[in-house]
Length: 320
Image (spheres, rainbow, N blue to C red):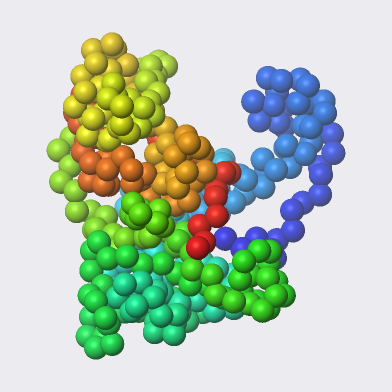
């Protein structure tokens, strides 16, 4: 969302403690020193959240999203329908449509095995708001290989001459081949270690057997686990290992929730999952997304809620 046209309000100055969120009131040191600035930012956050909820038809006016009969939950609509299902690579009636948000790019192109990684073959069109879009039609006779589920692809971006820092974004505005931000499935080459996005399976293709359990009364008992080290074998663990070996024990010990660490794709394993390269793709070294879905489904079947640690502030370079 472009907020550039709406300047952040100036600091409201000193306010009564009753005007602050509860988590500031509970810490007098915050209220005395940083309170006004935190309150200003919190108010901006609530305004933005109310705006998103209102777009979904459910604005509550209190910094919360309230589902209403006959309308989608506003925040989920914004994140999923206008994000996850809109950006990235998805099927439509005539082929595969790709969208990427790259407001600092001068040009963009969809590349992959299907077109020989040729940046001139399938250029993207800038459709407004920094969004680039390309369509690979099913009847395209120039394709070198079919663009189908499991095929490798990336996005090539050309920077503005003299803008940006590092690589092709500096000086002459050269091409940089990068992982798409909305990649849902990735694959790392075992020889070169290059990571590529894969044409994703259908978002609704998994046959779920168990509904998400209700939150238990009182506090959660959370079992925190990094799947890669959650095995007695001298190898990187997999989603399937956690499902078959640990879930029965976690349930028996009386836990009510499972917290998965290192969930998002990260190229450097020793980062423990904190140098994320594809925030929306499950970590490929632990197994395909279907195995993660099976893990979540099995946990739900045992009455366990499943939480994922989402790392948003430690993104690593995704360009090659």
